[in-house]
Length: 463
Image 1 (cartoon, rainbow, N blue to C red):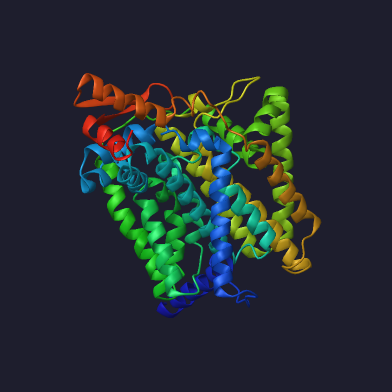
Image 2: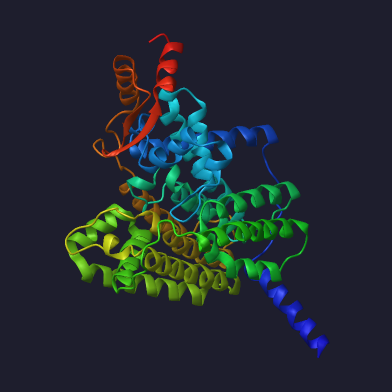
């Protein structure tokens, strides 16, 4: 009996190794370590710049956006470091956004918006880098893998609120963490970095709990200390975040189940994964349900064809990705009672709540790309780029390009942070105040700053 059980477990581990957790294939690099570092830094810089251009560089760099200012930067100004970092927001720990707020508080006040925005964009760029490395075993074709990284950094379903903003970087980290749980790092150094990333994500967003089934499968297939490092980080993050979230009564809303949740999944996730927020939203506004039903039929036929023509590993990955996408979105919207605010009524669309669609939509994209990649490998080998791959990349490029521009000078650019700080410093000097509210964007948000900090910042600059 024990022998049969051991054999069954061994067979399960072998199947998991082959399907969900394959090792990254060994390859020979054609460039040196220094050249790779330069290329890496250049690509990270490009990823940061592109995010700034989505919002508008001036608006992004001269504005503290929403909770970036009122919660995270304000906490850094008014609390001690440890107290600020481990303070909950909306009922859970948000360590990475709070660390970004602390960075903003380290520089002169008028430069805080620049640092907060650049740090936020850097975290998203690093999330894309994690996806690049972690998806290598499932996406052998570098063009398909590059397309996945591009839509990770420039998520076509992300609305204005979720771009270059400290408040929402953890949603991009969530997607990267999904892939890191699938990754077999070839080095201990890589496993250590992956572990730190997984832990940081857990301490910033309890949504990592949706990956618990995947982590359990990873535990069954664990081989060595590199696997144990990643699993240990997952367990440690859960041990800290889950009790905090369960015990907190902050930001509690009454859960609400409505049929709008399923409709919203079709509109914001399925439609968004294929066409992006703007193009998909325009199609919904113009054609409504006939368009959405036709899109669903095409997506189902394409998925069925891909599953039938692909290998067992691709099928297993697709099952995990699709199930995680659906469960994550439905439960998140139910818990936050967010569906009524997110569902698109007839003849119009909007981006409110786009953060909830980021990971579920990217999981659908991942499933499609893995199916396409493995079909190509079965037929032509990983170095070729067949028409199905070119078509998928083309669709993703169109979705990304049409949803790229999110500039809104009224919401994101008013008031400019530099002007607000200067006006506040002048008011402090003329009215002899101890502290003063400084408005941030969007209008109606703001932070409270001590006049000593304002006047000393301007004195050092001679203004």
